[in-house]
Length: 161
Length: 107
Image (cartoon, rainbow over all chains, first blue to last red):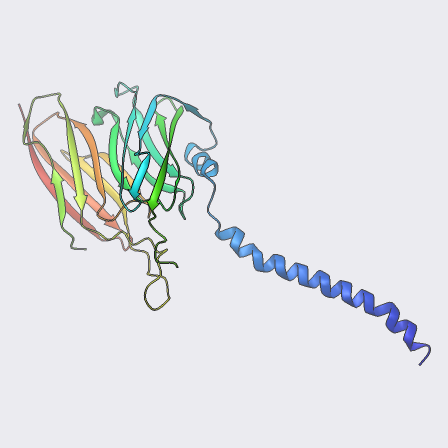
């Protein structure tokens, strides 16, 4: 008995530590899928679009209403400065958001036959946030424009509550 | 996929003129993030791709994501080159397509 008591005293703290370590490891495993599911940030989404290149400010204008009453349909227009000739045109225009469940909104593919680099559509905004338009020119450069909107009625997640 | 599609193309234009094209299709664009009355997520069902071809050549297309509103509307421009057909195709998540077309007369 006397011989086994110190043993208990010696092994129990180790057992607690192991339990604690196992618990922490378990928590990390549980929290991993959430990190995997988390959407890429606005910057990451733009980097994926540009293939790692930096997007410079200018040459693109994103028109977004500053105050949005209904986030389910927000009219946006993107204009890019480009002569739209065979050797100097806009190849793609991508729209990205900051706080929707997915960072991508839409990607337009244009060419010299577009005549003008101007596109419009209607998008969803889940909350007040920043929206960015990035244009890829035929010379491989990227240009961006950002605008923010305040949304009073949210889209996408309205039925979650 | 049978959905009502609306396209707006000017009928008669001058050669070289830049014309505005508008296209819309009746589609719920279900995001997959909404929860239905039974507590499970409503499955995603969106238009994934929109394409426009002019005289048989694809001149404009777009990749759509769930953040595009229901009844997706897209407006863009084209240079009027020759008289012919401007055809529109929408492709949904299941790979089914819906088409619409309009004739343009270039003088």
